[in-house]
Image (cartoon, rainbow, N blue to C red; front, side, top):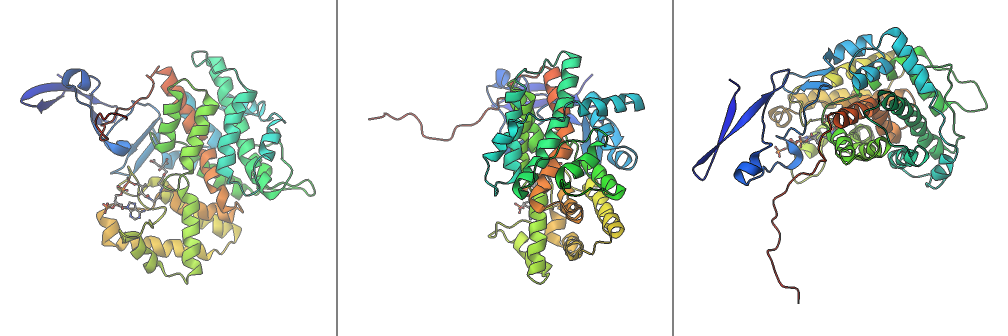
Length: 422
Ligand code: SDX
């Protein structure tokens, strides 16, 4: 006999089924709530509301668990590569070596971006933020690939996945090349996906460009750690936009815009700017902790806190370790890393943070590695987007394959009642 929840309103009792997931998470199924009671729920920010069922990512905020398709993030970060994890997230199973090689080669077939896209790029001022350019250019891809995805046709869906993985990486780097006044680079089909990212970003026509394996490995791991995170703000946006049957590029473009916000993916840039400000002000971490705790002060400790993790973000632990390793291997001495460690140690001891279960999240240390790899601060959130792309694609695909209804939340109106317009 499955569990139910009883709701009593004005003396009348209503019974709702309780839905249980494969990890024993439980939810009150309120699909019939309004029909039965005439009432809706109210939950700003959806802190207590599940929007869907999903087989892609499981996370337990209390225990600090993160798994992609059942595989622990620690296991994947240590033993998989980014394209392998991308395939796993999108298609549900680990690819064999042959399938992975075919996936990489099929992506290579779609890395040429229509040259006319450059005239769109030229329209942006040099000062434009890369995330704004990326959102616009991603949406513009629809104009050059107007045929919408037939999600029920496996070949068509697979081709759309490869096209998105190929073109998004290239245009993401074009945002940097534009700001630097460099010529646009093209993907080199003789090299791997992550190595190509560094080449697309930094190779200039006048001299050969070599990428160290340390850098490739560090970036590959960072992209894996960012690849998916169930129904976060940007992924929910991708699902919401896709639920109207808008195209994949249009939905991803909306996800880029949602990720840009400093409370979400934009936090990795905000963390570095915060750490640099603390460093430039003499390294007084206590002053910034006090600001973060002061309700009168809008300042928050960027890179700390999380909607779901009320324990350490497992990704932060892995990135913190990787930051030490990468800086050591590259022989980079970065005083900002010291400031980050000092700030983290102080916050973890502080009652305000402890009582609110505020721990470092994925964004707290990632920027330190990006900086060591020579990636400019305003490109940090673009890095997040490149990592998150397979997750967005996987979630969009699942939502469409499940034939989910168009997303349309309810509200409670609190404005003026009827009045005559004279
Ligand atoms: C990402 O959802 C995801 O999965 C996102 C993500 C992903 O992979 O997609 O994990 C990536 O976005 C990570 C989060 C990056 N953002 C930041 O680092 C920005 C700083 N963090 C905060 O803005 C905040 O913690 C959020 C936005 C992340 C979470 O906010 P919530 O869940 O809405 O929590 P809240 O604002 O209700 O905070 C609860 C309390 C409040 O204090 P009280 O009202 O109880 O007194 O904690 C305080 C907040 O003021 N608080 C902070 C704080 N975060 C929360 N106080 C100071 N500094 C902070 N960072």
